[in-house]
Amino acid sequence: MSETLRVALVGNPNCGKTSLFNHLTGTRQKVANYAGVTVERKVGSFTLASGRAVRVLDLPGAYSLDATSPDEAITRDVVLGKIAEEQDQHAFLCVVDATNLKLHLGLVLEIIAQGKPILLVLNMMDEARRRGMQINTEKLSQRLGVPIVETVAVRNAGIENLMGALDQEKFRTPNFELSDVILTGSNHDKVSQILRDVVIFVDQEDKRTDFLDKIFLHPILGLASLALMMFVVFQAVFAWAEPIMTRIEDSFAWLGEFVGQFISHPLLNSLVVDGIIAGAGGVVVFLPQILILFFFILVLEESGYLPRAAFLLDKLMFKAGLSGRSFIPLLSSFACAVPGIMATRSISDPRDRLTTIFVAPLMTCSARLPVYALLIAAFIPSQTVWGFLNLQGLVLFGLYMSGIVSALIVATVLKFFQKDKSEHALLMELPSYRIPDIKSVWIGLLDRAKIFLKRVGGIIFALSILLWFLCTFPQPPEGGTLPAIDYSFAGMLGHLMQPIFAPLGFNWQICIALIPAMAAREVLVASLGVVYALSATDEDAVTQGLSQIISQGDLSWSLATGLSLLVWFIYAPHCLATLATVKRETGSWKTVAGMTAYLFGLAYLMSFLTYQIATHYFG
Image (cartoon, rainbow, N blue to C red; front, side, top):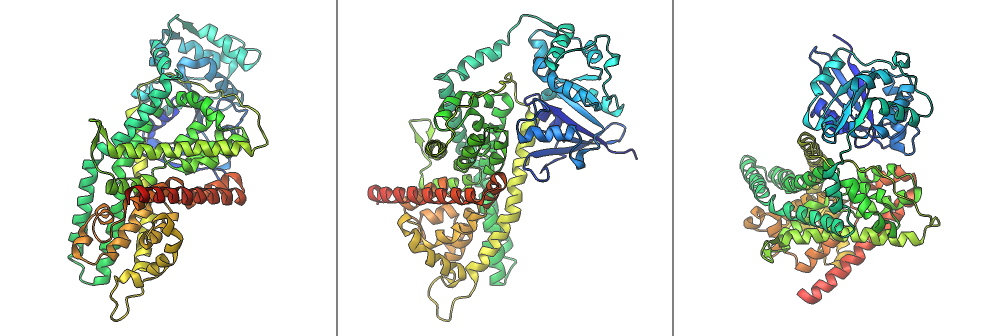
């Protein structure tokens, strides 16, 4: 069998590498980190028509081998062969945006200068033709001394030609002697010479991008459009997901009853039904909401809108001690603070990077969504406001906005304690608007579902069983009149903690659930499911959903308690992975301790105020 062909995708940001990678590898890909750093790499595989296997490495986007950020440094080191595990690349697929050759060919020339085997992938050719650009690819190939394949990655066009070129090993080490033109001067001069010779520009503006930018980059219309988009997203999270969530909840309730009837031993029945099924089901039910949220984020990313949002918010973020470059890491933190903090490696200024790391946990990550959804469903009526707005969606929007506003306030406060008061200009490329690649969106959603379900099957599953054990043992004494959980290890600890959290309205059951939630926020839902399943004293309460238990009957909370817990999770750093990432990125336990202290302090203060005010007005 032939040796596996190893190729690496390299190119500027926004050149279409990700779409090309997704079309080549589909779901046969994995994400990992380079040893010693936290810059992600994607590795995938596929098989050529000849049966030969291909390993594809998707490198971080880079404008130059003269790296200015850690992610560009990884691309540079792979190209230069400095990373041992990636030294044996058979070819580098240089992906360039055909509409922006002036910028993208600079990196290609730098790679050519290294004498590496290259195949140039001229992407977005449909957009170039739409703009009236005529590119003589045969002449461009001669000038560069490398073979060229034309593609339109988002439409899967040219992919077969690319695979055929790989099958025939058309990539080669560049040789300028093949060219009939001698290129001289700097890379900028060389690119100018090449463009004059191979590209005919028809005077035709990108009217679509110009028209949309007049709206989305307008200082008033742009901000209004951004707010409207976010508002629609959070309305959809509740309105679209509700029917699917109801079916999932009913399915797990049926599964618990079905499995329970075959297990006669009381303790084993409790472990399986109350510990495993109730714990996992209480979290899986929120998967539809998470996927709807990520669907919108991926569509905005694919369309080219996100860099414009960063540009639009630069002035506002600068006043808070941040920059527009902080927008992408902070937006990533809506998915999870871990990749958001890792994404700060693209921020070259140390001051802006540290501030962004400090406020990233305040962005409402997807792990908070199950907690928010549970409490909103329990305490906020599902009704229409002003004839067309979902009240629960409005509350969710308010929670997200509270995190954003809090982050800006914290960044503003940090600004006064920083010695460096200099200004840093925002320079970033604004790509053309394009129709989102449905396959890339689908793969992104599939990856997010796998990550979420892996957490359910891993850490949440394990913690649910551990919590069940702590809530079950020791068994109640002879003649005990309270629910068994009151006599357990968890019950003892919950009652011990309760006086500390009483000013926030938290009962001892909530105190128990807060402990395993330190591992991952969404564990709170599974933990509450286990605790209340074991706290229930009548059969009807056991079969009720968790949202019904905490809003109705003897075990219910007050509205003030529900609101207080919602506010607690806006601020509290319930995520050990986030704290570990901060330590790895900053190399400072002092920074981790400072972040933990200020977040817990804010959580306690804001929950206290919320509970006291809500109790005063709502009783």
